[in-house]
Amino acid sequence: MSRSGSQSRQVRWCLIVVVVAVWVEQVDGVWPLPQQLHQSAERDPLSPRLFSFTYGRDSAAQTGCSVLDAAFKRYFSIIFPDFTTGSENVLQYMWSEPQPFVVSVSVKTRGCDGYPDENSDESYTLSVSEGQAVLRSVSVWGALRGLESFSQLVYQDDYGTYFINKTEIVDFPRFAFRGLLLDTSRHYIPLHAILKTLDAMAYSKLNVFHWHIVDDPSFPYQSRTFPDLSNKGAFHPFTHIYTQSDVMRVIEHARMRGIRVVPEFDSPGHTQSWGKGQPGLLTPCYKGSVPSGSFGPVDPTVDTTYKFMESLLKEVKFVFPDSYVHLGGDEVSFACWQSNPNVQKFMEKKGFGKDFTKLESFYMESIMNMTATLNKTSIVWQDVFDYHERPRSKYVVEVWKQGCYLCKMRRVTKAGLKVILAAPFYLDLPIPTHSWARYYNVRPLAFRGTDEQKKLVIGGEVAMWGEYVDATNLSPRLWPRACAAAERLWSNEEKTLNADLAFPRLKEFRCELVRRGILAEPLFVGHCRHEYEGL
Image (cartoon, rainbow, N blue to C red):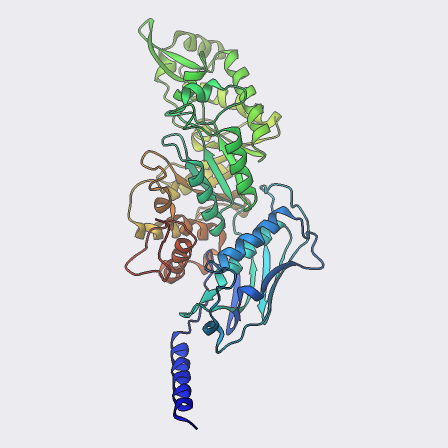
């Protein structure tokens, strides 16, 4: 053998040693943790050139399904983020020649043109074996969740070779409602930041975007029926509004990711911006026997209020396809009502005495009856229940107050009402990222009650209020802490009791978010192999 041949063989063996040294086994690398996950050390190399998604022969959905066609394209780019035609390095596959790999997706019901709802089936099974993966689900929404899990199973070695381990997953969400509230009134959040938030929600398998679209500071929603609400109530009538086109884009972006959009139009309080564009809507406050010039909550004593609300809610039904609408009802100050002589007369006529909680209950019952007539389900903050624990109509209660929130969950479910838990998931305050465990350790069903009561807990949501949040700090304030709540709401609680065991997976998932362009804060000292490159 020539000397050159001997040198060549030595170089080759050196390469083998290096390759062996950098092989990385990725096990249990899925967030949120699936209900059942079994992985083998056996793995296959993947080549973008030889990789494809396809529909199973028995799938009710086939090519032309808008949701899945778009998802296949989107997830190809997510799985192979640095791939462009002809970009693969031959050295990547010197020791393991890749074979074709096909992901076959089969759904039992088509549903490609509809919207996710409270009854959507998000379950799926995923089987990864040599040369193929088989993803099965009842609905396209379950298929989306399965595609997300598949994307997290793919990883790279130090030479850039893609791999996937043989894996079996059976998965479904623990709770049907896994939400994220975003306040776009206290600070205007640009459309691109909302869309990026929806992307990150899909990566974490959160499925309800609770759009707290208006509040006291501003009314950025551009109403077709009442254009002056944003013309006079927004921070700026042209630059700081959400047009009908913007709203449609948010709803469609969410739909393609299996996310519901639930709008909130909070009243009778939190409505100062409403009054700027709708004269006569708010209650005039009095100082003694004369108006003070200031205004309080919506005036619940005049017919024009209810005519306005009925027209606005009809528009909401037309614009927002989801069957839920959030009506607010929290933090109503009674001082202005108490000062107003017309309100006092109305209270006397109705037999409410001096109990202004009865006046708020009267108003909220009227508004909830309107939504029921429109075939919408009302969500309200817990204040509405607190003031009227024996409701005449059915609604969903969102528990938000600190303290013994589990006590409140028990009382609400005992009254036979569905409930959403938000109290322990407030993310807007500037606290350290390492506080993620406080959200991870929440136990939503840890209250004394029957099995029937606990079935009424439909889920929970993280809340990002806007006093200190705009587009500059939205993503790092949200992620990865919201991911902790996402796993709590999706995964089996018995398998996810230990935050220390969850930390390595969350750290890895945070790096995956960063690679996908999400500005997620670091959890502790360390690094990501692919650091953020968006700046």
